[in-house]
Amino acid sequence: MPDMIDIDTARVFLNFMVDYYALIRRHIVESNQFRFNSHGFSTLYTLRNYRDRAITMTEFAGELGITKQQLTKLVNDLEAQNFVKRSHNSENRRQVYISITDEGVIHLEHMLGEILHEIIKSLEGFNDDEKLKIQEYTGALSEMLRRDEEHCRRREEQSAE
Image (cartoon, rainbow, N blue to C red; front, side):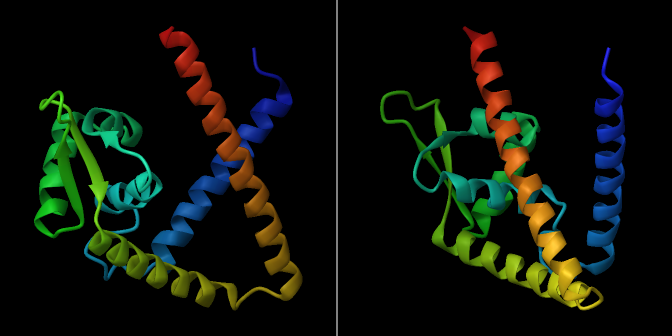
């Protein structure tokens, strides 16, 4: 059974997530072809982390939490725009890798620039102390979430053994 601190922490975090999502929906300009909360944006954003190593379509679908069929349709659309490319394993042609193209990176950076612009505009309503708190707390939260992701990956690897 969870401790009270776990329950309280989960409740505060859930409230933060819902409030943050509402803030993003209010402030982020949806003029991009792929909305901030779309699978297209998530695909490009996540693929940016795989510029130095290959990832299979199957692995990537699992990482995004979508089916292989959904990813195939999404990749078809992104590939038609030259934002991603597929390549086949030379030893096993059934194994397909996905990667972001230079054009995809440029498009993603443009979208991120628009998002940053909107966030900066929304920060105008805060004083410097509040801005420093936002910076400190979100930085710490991001670090904790990265550690949790690593912990989950290790746990998955152990259960697969």
